[in-house]
Length: 236
Image 1 (cartoon, rainbow, N blue to C red):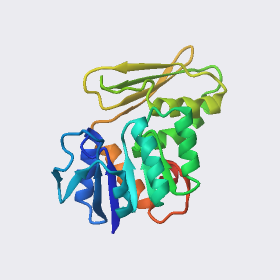
Image 2 (cartoon, one colour; image 1 turned 90 degrees about the horizontal axis):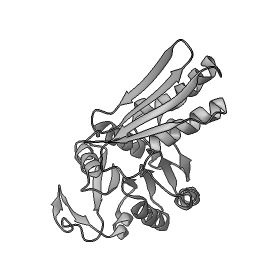
Image 3 (cartoon, helix red, strand yellow; image 1 turned 180 degrees about the vertical axis):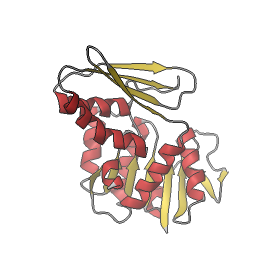
């Protein structure tokens, strides 16, 4: 059984990861981590109490982190200190924070992905081939939409789409970000030639697809050697 820690356990993503992990016989949740000052600190969440102390990581095997960049940066220090595996889904990291992820992956195993959904990660693999087949006469743009509370724009997923498509085509990929209502996450890649248009769209209907992917990654990374891994590695 994998001893699981969840950072941001009382947030929208963390709570759903917690609920799904509770139903999975492969996990024993040993840490529900939240930032200091959160009203739920010390309250019961399932069979454990919500904690603000990352030192609780010594009780875990794997930490799943969908928090904010500043919190994720702090958690990187603690997973390195206690030699614990990390599944990191936090987006909006600075260049310095991304470098820190690489440094910590030299000490512990880290699965880092801007999007944990299986469908999106299949798109990361398929879209470059489509772009190459269509050739230079097709222009490409990305439109992404998320809920109004999302802080980073473009999204981490859109940035990864830009990266894989730019690498395949050598082109700059214009991207448009929309922040409205309670949209979980929509990403549309548009290929347009002179007489036709192809649109590839991924829509997240609920946060469950990210939670399921994160838990799949947590199972995969358990007992893996130190290194920086992606969801492509998990899906192999």
